[in-house]
Image (spheres, rainbow, N blue to C red):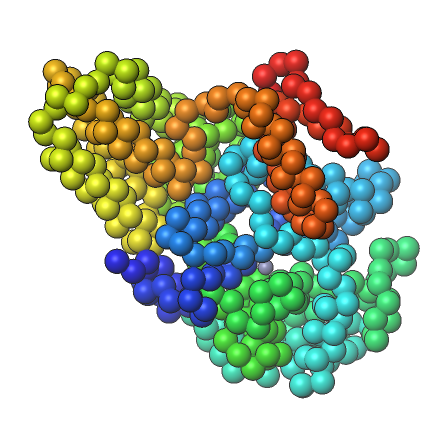
Length: 470
Ligand SMILES: [Zn+2]
């Protein structure tokens, strides 16, 4: 069965065919780092991580880019208010973001580019757009002209004239057409700025994603994803910039996740129902939060309430308890069960149904209901007089593998044995020798998760167990 994806660009579910066989390039718009993330930002992190995990489960090698907007008006404002440097603020909230999503079981991105580290590529991208006649400079600002790009509005399904009627020129803007948007902003006095052919300034928001996608994934990518609110203008502008510059289709599939409501109301600062992810994670098992987020299809709105979260916790417990009961029964099972083949066939059908649900535009809600059916069936099996170890193990493996696709561990991980720690350390040493620092960091993090603390000394790496379990 092929994977199908609902593509915002065509408003249709399409069969997924990557550009290169066996490989997927995926770009997800990341946060502007001036605050801790709220629960609405946790949703795309979790759902697109599950998309990635499923693609990997299906054998694809996924290159996953998530960017950080580490310089912009909001960060500058926050820095001015607190008297700190822009970079200090940005670093603090990048680290906080990475910590929060790691707690939520989100795999590390292949690349996490930052605006301030992509400045050369951004500047030459803008330069190219001016050269090709899609952009112009006025007194140190550079603007993109959507009217010069045929196809503007194709993602948000609006005509250029409809868009024109909603656009305004703000006081102080020197653009020719209200639709034009900034690629480069001239620096105000004492503001953080970079040198450019148009004087000191910094990039507008949209250009970074076009420049980063090109740098890390190439001119055409498979999947571009983000929150529904980014469709217009952000993603529309990304398409215009990239396709104007490269003369090629920018992304084959556009995926957008739905909104999150808090107690049936839109989350907003003015309503006072703004929920930070870290505050939730202080009280809740992160895997329950993740399971809850995936219990609704990513394109639908999701309602976040304490009761629903508790319900998700109970549901996940049901699955985990079935797994533990299977484990318990394994010891006393014999090979006297005559229906083994029948049961194995049943289990493989559950696996197939799970895959069908995920193939259908990553429908995690239906996939989870297949997991409940599997659990129910496992419980029924445990009522049989004779059980076979083979059936029990297959039930366990199936639950484990399928939950792993959703980024959830079926049981709390056991402690590592000393020789396992040593083996990982050896591998890390090798990785560092080969300058594969991302693998080395990954191992350090894995060990940290298991309560193993590393200390790099001139004599080599020492390790010890943390005194409390995590
Ligand atoms: Zn973006």
